[in-house]
Amino acid sequence: TPQPQLQRTLTRELSQHEGQTVKLQGFLHARRDLGGVQFLVLRDVSGVAQCVGSGLTLPLPESSVEVVGAVKAHAKAPGGFEVQVQAFRVLTAAVEPPPVEIPKMEWNVNPETMLDYRVVTVRGLKERAALKVQAELLAAFRDHLINEGFTEISTPKIVSAGAEGGANLFPIDYFGHPAYLAQSPQLYKQIMVGVFERVFEVAPVYRAEEHATSRHLNEYLSLDVEMGFIESEEDVMDLETRVLAAIMTRLRERAQPELALLGATLPEVPAHIPRITLMDARQLVTEKYGHAVGGKDLDPEAERLLSQHYAETEGTDFVFVTKYPRAARPFYAHPELNADGTPDPEYTRGFDLLFRGIEITSGGQRIHDHAMLLESIAAYKLNPASLEGYTEVFKYGMPPHGGFAIGAERLTAKLLGISNVRYARAFPRDRHRLTP
Ligand code: AMO
Image 1: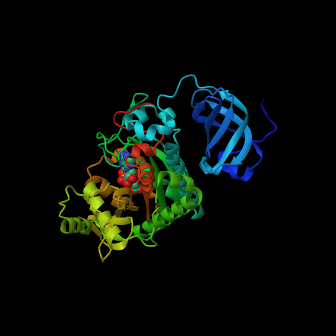
Image 2: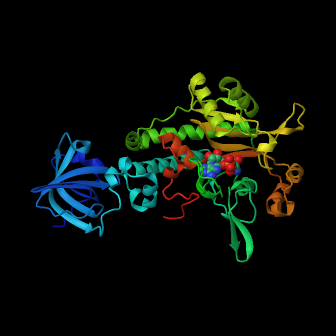
Image 3: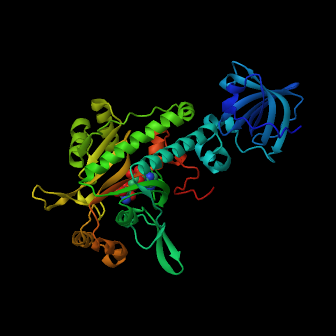
């Protein structure tokens, strides 16, 4: 019999209701029928509860159900309490058994299959815990920035030119005109510094990465920040340090059950994250670990080794790699300045942040001088006409500014010990996956 007068209790709250009759609503996570007695595990947004009844006809797993029953202490039940069912109601019966057994899938279902059936596998306790932690992380990011006077912005994801260099753009047909999916809100967030001085955006961006790796998605959530009236990129690195500390504080306060379920250990964010220049970093990795670094940046192995070095010598999971050469940075990166204030032709004020062996952020100071920007666009052999909508604003007093972007899935994955960024997104888009 339905009992509408009874307010819904969450499974997490059972301990406050010992001896009382409660109403639970959720999904039939697991069920066992021992003839006369039925055990069911009800999963709601807050966790799971074991319920026991008799004479019940249990529907298929994942049906949504309602249980009314008495709360009894029970040492072996999850959370230490069990509900003795007095009334059981199926709200929506599953019409088929789920393609995988949700409670058991982590240890017996192949990860690709789990992604194929993501619409239901994402209900799994660990899967949703990762997304819940990410949601708390986003809330902390927003809260902290708002407290520091930042304004949230929203910029176009359909754009006429790339911001980060040409190679990995997704072209689209915009009513017969060529257009692209935005690789980054970079150019727009800079323009908006002219409006609000301090801005941030939380939005997906698109990268036509050809290779399937554990750190690349074709659509990822970019946590973008841009701040005006700075002295140098040092101000930006300090800001990011405070943002990260605020994220860890909120996760400690609000995501304990999820962190425990995933066996995750949060890092300490030092008041001052160590810095090393890119050139020194390359040399260190070569001399200390015998790893010859290819390319102009750090390769993934060099990132891993550099993180290992800082973990061993300074006991920290974070390191800023600074003063990137121009050749490894986009046209908008501000050049390093010589002692006499003239621009250094070779190095920039761009940095990356490594966390537990992987780059989670790029950032830096940007060019704010109109003439310098036009020179840089020419030096990078870009078409100035395609960037006019951006360069125009630099005619009108853009202050010295800089910012950074955190890849939300990389940060989430590294915080939680998840091996592939795909599991830090509800519905990942990778080289071979457009559904679900
Ligand atoms: P960048 O291109 O380095 O910089 O990207 C910033 C951060 O985004 C994450 N990231 C990715 N995550 C998942 N899949 C991908 N394919 C992927 N590509 C990048 C990484 C990376 O550190 N406009 C600059 C930021 C700035 O200077 O403000 C930019 O987009 O964590």
